[in-house]
Amino acid sequence: MSEDGRNSVYLWLGTLTLFGAVWASLHFDLFEGISDTWLWPVLTVTIVANLVQTVWGFWQRRASNPKNPNRL
Image 1 (tube, one colour):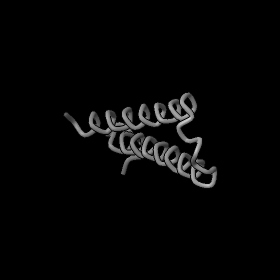
Image 2 (cartoon, rainbow, N blue to C red; image 1 turned 180 degrees about the vertical axis):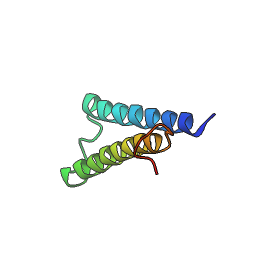
Image 3 (cartoon, helix red, strand yellow; image 1 turned 60 degrees about the vertical axis):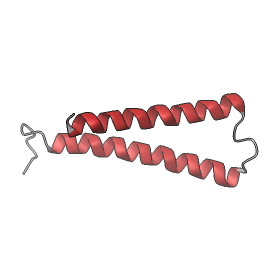
Image 4 (cartoon, one colour; image 1 turned 90 degrees about the horizontal axis):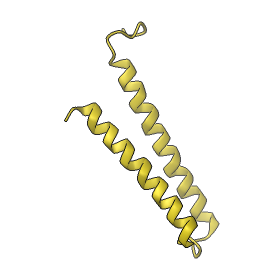
């Protein structure tokens, strides 16, 4: 499997895991006992990390494209 394929699988799994965790927490009230002091910062950091990883993957793919006119 190529590196791009492996990165795509990791991104999909991360996104599905995050979506599943948020859905489960809302549906089953899993985070009811956790204070808001910890819950929202942890979820925010997780979402931001996932978005940064996605953007980084797109950037690497764009930078490695030989037809990219901005490539050095």
